[in-house]
Length: 350
Image 1: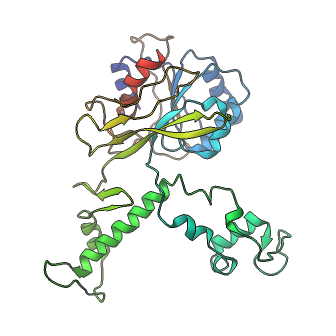
Image 2: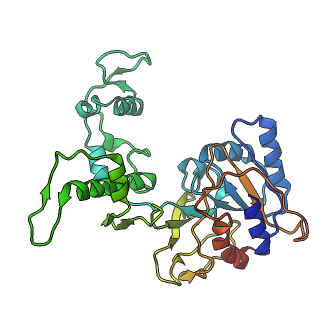
Image 3: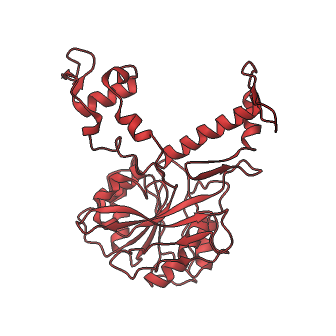
């Protein structure tokens, strides 16, 4: 965190406060942090926190008189649907794993019937919870009546049936294909002018798969999949902005992209208008951030972890920045996420 704070100050950002809060904290501690946020002069807050812990804190802030705050979120909560209930987060912005629609997944999920579902304990639990009935053919401990066979997943409206915002699932989807490509290269020969031959009797060792994973290079569902010498994939993220629709609903809008493999000048692109907190001016379509600032976004790891940074006018740059506990991912320098957004914020929020 010290590196992050030093980099922020180097960019001319005044860090007013730094706080850590956990869901397991006594309520008095959470209330104190909420009061710090409410009373501060800072109008931009960077929050590295899990959606579970953030939900706990925002519940404490709910109903409190707050000036418009520009929230910058980490991947852990910036696309969290449960957070959409808080109007204070309108205008929030942050980097997220790219979303995708996996071909055929929605139809596969919705075509499941009672017979298929009953073979899986996980699906059975979901089915019985969603429809309030039992697939066991009799009364359950929860007092549910037997399912009558008329239940249809297509009648549900819940996160299970919404496959339009798949992010982690898309990563798993691509990972599965990456492993398949690696195993194919181990057991199969694809020589020019020679029929493909696969020796399925070969015993495949985990280390072999790891070695061949480094060499895969393919495209799936519109995304390229490859790894560098360190075994890391190309850094690609979406810039997500929380915008209010005409009917008053909050929704996630992808307003830009970060792609480390793109040509210089196109690594970080904003291609839609950004709505800022408090009806601030919008950043125009087609804006690009200087490639020298466009480094991979920082996401801090750690369970039940939160840090806030306000920047406002209370403190001068000569005062020492506060410090706090951190657990940063090893491959990303601490200042990178904020440095990408800082030019945008400077032009729109000061």
